[in-house]
Length: 156
Image 1: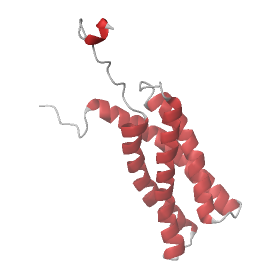
Image 2 (image 1 turned 90 degrees about the vertical axis):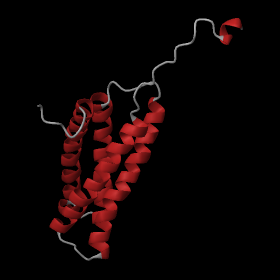
Image 3 (image 1 turned 45 degrees about the vertical axis):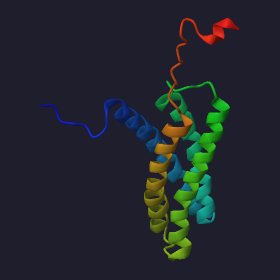
């Protein structure tokens, strides 16, 4: 008896690709956040927003052209707008964890900021993004409905 996978193979492949793109985005996010906050002295929340925005841009191209390359491309403006909307919602989730930790709880060290933003916040935001992107942004092709041979439309 074969071991049962937690996800069906197509969804497991999709999740693996999404995770790979996300891992690259994570590296971009952490690098830009620490460059801004630690080296340039930019305020932590602004550093977080700049880092997340940069990673979102990289992730869009990775997901559009690799993870979801077989999905419907007929409405790319709509897709980009929805991607931006859900990405901004994820940006709020991700950076809210940083804001609560840094400003609300007073954990202001570089380690605390990185844990709050890049572990807790990014974990919550990534789960939300995976669900929203696959559900609303990169939708599967809808099969065309076959018309009956003699439909009322033929009479027109």
